[in-house]
Length: 361
Image (cartoon, rainbow, N blue to C red; front, side):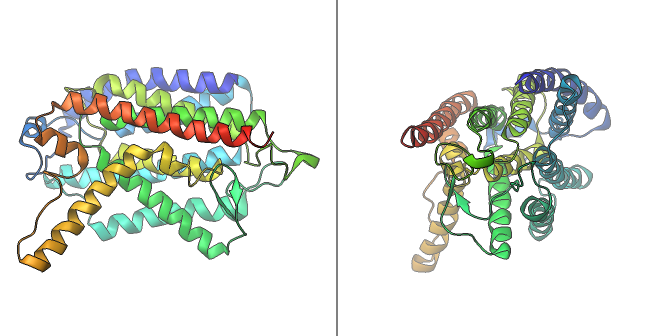
């Protein structure tokens, strides 16, 4: 438990001061954000704001977790290391995307196909050892061979199908958080709430962890090293909060794809390793809503264009946060209200998680 507290606190401090240093250095290097021309006109003033702030967040998480392990003299678990591999690997994909934007002075970085390939490679690099390689002391693999809601359900799935599920979750969630990163402080604030939720889940699963003859007991959980996963989740919570200090409206720095893709991948990794894959739809309900708004907007436009020759839109602008900005909401109002929605989603998810345990005792 000390590691959880240390990881969260150290990461917060590192992110708070590290982001300030990043603002200064990235400004000197000219790492300014490019703004999409078809976005809200109020966002054009952000052109030139230092970007790639996700670098500070990623370093804060890795260093915060490492410091917590050193101070408590505990060895890192294979589950936590795999989660950090997924986190850092997806940050590299985002970094390449951001760097191309800066280098070529455009709002589009990696081509869609190149980004999908990069995300797939990172997902597979995480998925293969998580399913077959590293195991905990009791032989439990970091990722189960069955689907899960609050715990494993249904039959064992073929290995190749499980890799497909991992790829889908990692790619889908990282893209969802990327779409949500469209307003100052929106993603950092909402992601911190989700990671705080996973910190609680990890601690709870550790306190009711199956071991020995208890394996298969409906009142306990079989995840591998849940407390160490809670330490990483706490570090991510702290890093998001520290970054939010500088990213809140008006933002002094933008996290870029470096941060947004990494945060989404980490959420997927935590869901897979805590056996709460389907529960992530509830915990990350805000990101689901934002992603669905884009899918509905594109689909409805194509359907109406084929039917009438004129494409129509369901929303004034997608993703969803821009729709409310077009309605006249101030950007800070959108962020605060979306944070509230994110908090309600996490509360509902934790309520489902706890109520399921109550029914088994």
